[in-house]
Amino acid sequence: MTPSPRLQTALSYWAAEARGDLPTVLMHFAEDARFTAPGFALNGRAEIAGFYQKIMGSYAAMRIESLRTVEHGDDVAVEFGFHFTRHGGATGYAEGCNVFTIRDGCIVRLRAYFNPADY
Image (cartoon, rainbow, N blue to C red; front, side, top):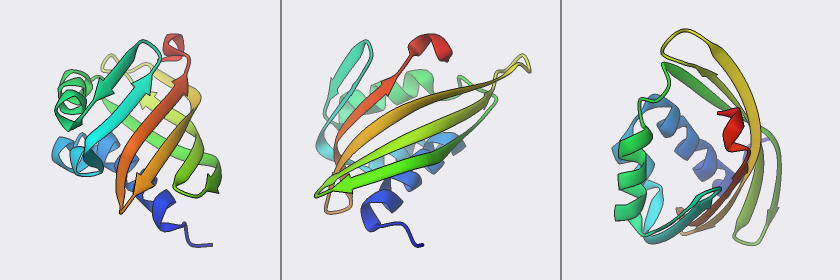
């Protein structure tokens, strides 16, 4: 089954994040997007850019997979699996859930739910 356009946007965002492609990550966000996660709340693409500039490169390799999804209107909830390799070679796996609000192909709101200790 082909993913919906909203789910395609979410998956494309994660693919860009895994590649470390900051310009493409930011293209997924509306100028006035909001992004909240445990420990922080970001407002606008400029704050989101600052966040990603700090964290990009934190892992030697990473891959994010969609485990389960549900959609309603502009919202897409994606339960995900995060596979990563640290720069020292240690590997890990964590799960979480992101709830995206996507309009006109752009993320206008992203709420991330995960345990920071798993990362």
